Image (cartoon, rainbow, N blue to C red; front, side):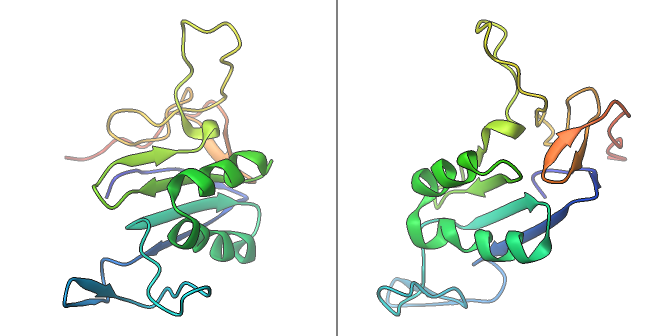
Length: 144
């Protein structure tokens, strides 16, 4: 688990190639197929999408596998009701702007949400509503 995000009136979907797969001759085979090649889409390990509907999140969770993390984040950041957490092939965790911590050195940095070091929704304990983190209730505490 890399993040815990309290949701309210939002949908979340995660697609990954790490549970049901097999490796053969250096290729990881799994259920997400690149429609351009007919081969396994393999540009990220995991994509978690938060948006207003499950239909939207499920479809968008495959985007990063086919297009790669940079192009997918560009698309997600342009969609008003979408946030995402991506894990790259080398294990880096990437977030859309709506989930990144505000940069105190930038006066225009007014993100309404953050994912803290423990991966919890942070923004004064925000909840994700309709695809964006909002609210003032404290985040759930990790029992560990």
